[in-house]
Length: 335
Image 1 (cartoon, rainbow, N blue to C red):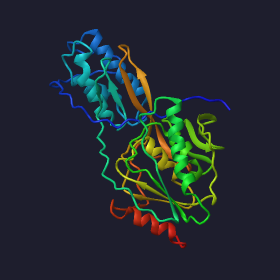
Image 2 (cartoon, rainbow, N blue to C red; image 1 turned 180 degrees about the vertical axis):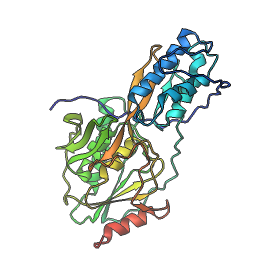
Image 3 (cartoon, helix red, strand yellow; image 1 turned 30 degrees about the horizontal axis):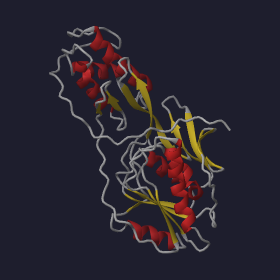
Image 4 (cartoon, rainbow, N blue to C red; image 1 turned 90 degrees about the vertical axis):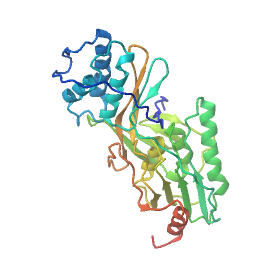
């Protein structure tokens, strides 16, 4: 098999509010010169940003781009430099409202217009011996192949150390998974998730990419993204699985949440996820700044498209009752 690294890059960032200038009326079409006191540098830079959004955003078919561009330019009517254009970029991100994109200046300042996520305080749960429990944490700090291997093996060790013939099912805890690289998560949790395509990235033009777990590998389409040195099969295949979610289940965490939707013997508990269920791509601008946009939407194995929205659980459960609710469902032979 070919190997190509194309992981979903995910971040949970706080918004940085930049003050915009007084608006003035302007009428223009994309690419047309505006009647403001722009230098070529400022106007060209804002046009570059908006052009990338118009061409690539998963929301590109939903937006009136002439109106969008007008509002962006109206927000900074006297911009002279790239730095002067920053409030216009914030305005564009705010109007785009993809809840996943952000902009990093060439000097390293990052800002976006998305809401922020705050992990909640969660106590270590007490789990009975007839239930397996796996905590899948975010992994933004994985920088090397060795780091990823350690992460995958830690998930596999959680599974192997608890697996036995008398287990009634598993709890997969995605609460406070604030994202990172979904493929080590997928490779690690694969023995519980099971083989085959688990979800899709769907683009505005209808193009589809799939993610899957196959023969111990986390896959993007037909390409290996992550493997493991200790492939493992459960004593009891296709177990009941309770998936735990909360508002700090973000992006790559939402990939795993979507992966379990449509799987047999599975039910999710908790509260809706953060709502960044989109695949992102990085775009390098002329000044070496970086623009990151959601360019595709997550869809489950049955191709139900979540449109960048939060993933709702099957059962609403409070922080206090979620473990009890999950255990009760797993143990109930009639459900």
